[in-house]
Image 1 (cartoon, helix red, strand yellow):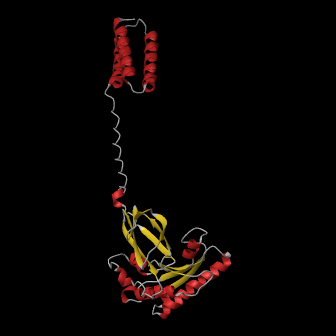
Image 2: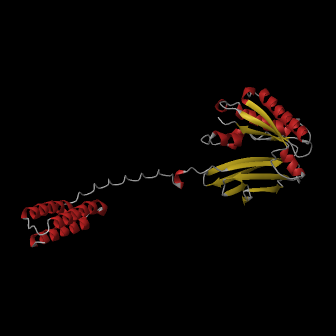
Length: 315
């Protein structure tokens, strides 16, 4: 083999190594270079010793072109687009944005009329309240409880429940002695007109209580209903409906107590209608013994549970 042929072969091998070393996909480069080397070997063997310069120059040109293609600049891959920004999660309300529930308070006393030296049982229950206070002369008490009262004269007790969501008041009166006294009217309680309607309704419209196994209105119940009717018939307080709930104590069958509770609610409705309250505004329902005001099997609990209760209908 001539020196020219040997030099051409070395140059071709270097070009093959360059192409293979710089290729991103070796399988695409090895195959054509393998063919070129095979062709080189075949040609040089067949023309060995001929010294043909033209043949050597031709092969040298072909291999140089292949080397140039293999070692030329590679096409750069197209960069991927940047990822889309992650959307921000919706803002959540902070605890300060959530309105706090207003405190609620329920209170009752039984019996509401006593003789001097006798006692009455005051019961109360509060919700969403951090403190409960009773005036006069009692002070702070638990959120739920009972207290035996021994007033020596007619006394009105004011219960105040305070919590993060506001304040609410209830008043109950224990009458002492045989002298008839005027009922405590809604105007005497001095209800703040800026209070929500539900709060004003609770303050002004009080429950009435019944004797055992009776639906007759006592003199005390009539006075309470007179005060209720006075507030309900006022021109400022006629734009809503309300419910009279009839309740019983636990004595008696379920069916009997449901019927007795309905009768008590109907009696209260008829009395209010006779005092000028539009009966179309009044809805009656009986719960029998299902919703006691005071849980227990004592006479005090029974007396508190025999009642007609007034609830503002959601507007």
